[in-house]
Image (cartoon, rainbow, N blue to C red; front, top):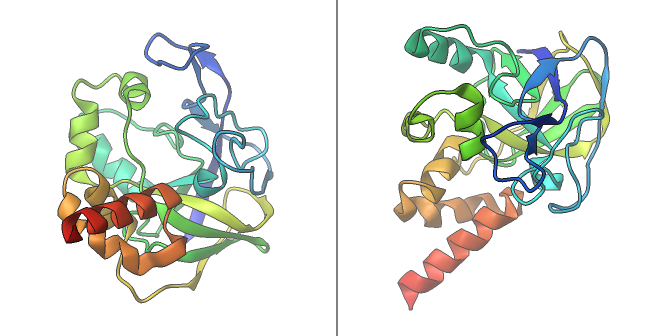
Length: 222
């Protein structure tokens, strides 16, 4: 398992975002050298965990629980075949493009060591948005991405560090609860009946999903 590229975005004006300034950092490109990764701060205040990476809409993106977004090259390759067009590393807005790692199948709370120092922890899958659809220029993209359910994974920073393309990825902790990023995604989008299962992941789960799961269970009990 290895890191194929570390991808950074710059603010770009686009017509397809509802962000107040009309800009987005979703168009990410591979960095040439090492990139420092650290916890950026809480959502709404903190942006990306990667130095030099732009997060423009702090309402929905960035913050400690979404400090880093990873997507598997294998899933990009499958989308290439379906869409009939090349998809470069970073084109899904991912910070990390991986090789040999089942990113959507990663467990909530699973920890990865990348390179010699950085340790990340999986918190949730990625929910597609209007900006993602506009960026790719694919009609019905939100629906198609949701149906496939290969979401990639958001991660929090446990131990900061510096990474670069080619670094090895090691799974250093894997919980036993069975709650994957893909399952979390289905629970908060198309299969709400799965929400109670998310509670097994505990505080490792993205706090917004944990709150939603607890609310659902309380409503069902009430």
